[in-house]
Amino acid sequence: MVGPSLRAYGLTVPLDGPLHAQRDLIASLPDLGYTDVWSSEAGGADAFTPLALAAAWAPALRLGTAIVPAFTRAPATIAQSAAALADAAPGRVAIGIGTSSEVIVSRWNGLPFERPYQRVRDVVRFLRAALAGERVSHAYETFTVDGFRLLRVPDVPPQLLVAALRPGMLRLAGREADGAVLNWLSAEDVATVAPYVGDKEIVARIFVAPTPDPAVARRVARAAIATYLTVPVYRAFHEWLGRGPALTAMWTAWEAGDRRAAAAAVPDDVVDALVVHGPPDACRDHIRRYVDAGVTTPVLALLPVPGDPADHVRALAPSRSP
Image (cartoon, rainbow, N blue to C red; front, side, top):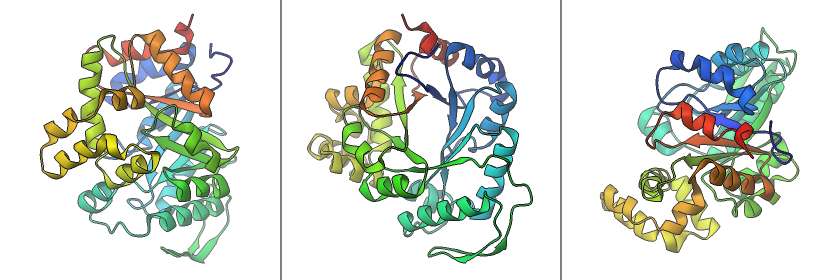
């Protein structure tokens, strides 16, 4: 079902709509050629509930978080949730840990967004020990754990991945985790990013606007790009990638409070690089470019274009490839 160079093909869940209504679609994903489902945790569903449902609805799927924020859950709580999911789906779980953003951590959750690199590193080190069943008593740089031990240790510990954008976090992913989770980059950017991770797994969330109408796709994509790439961590990432000159007008308009002008200022070539769009075959070809560049696990994230999201999932499936 999955083409020769597509050993993995993931989908971001949940889709728009009630969780309970997505059972039949999730159950059909393996037959369509999807191998993975990956969740996130920002302002919608939490990271674990959609994956727990998928574990029951489609036992063949690999389950991943992309990502669980390192700040908004206590380390022991992350360990318990990760262990329970790994216990429910042995050998099929990958836990992506990342910083999230100052908006989510500080403004939405009232927590200090301090030393993000150190926090992610410490959480990964703690999880590695805790998920192996060790009793953990350690003063990490950003938190202290005194005598914690999981009471339910999974037979197969989940893989641990780090959400990474720039060199420091990318190196951490390659050095101390099982791989990296990437976000908001082009297929061509993979060549810049991948060497820092080495031979570990590289998961990339790839935003897809599955419509043959480029005007519709670009309108939806511009709104998403302006929302995300004005966040400081993503701005720094794209400045590092060399897109500073192309995105300066967007950042200027956003800082002036004009979100509509910010979205309108995103150039077509930036949209076309960062968001996959077009008919299904063109989208699959574009996704394959990420894999050819070094992504081991492409994960589709559907943007809200006209049509039923379930129909888009079926149309984009690897099994539909010629």
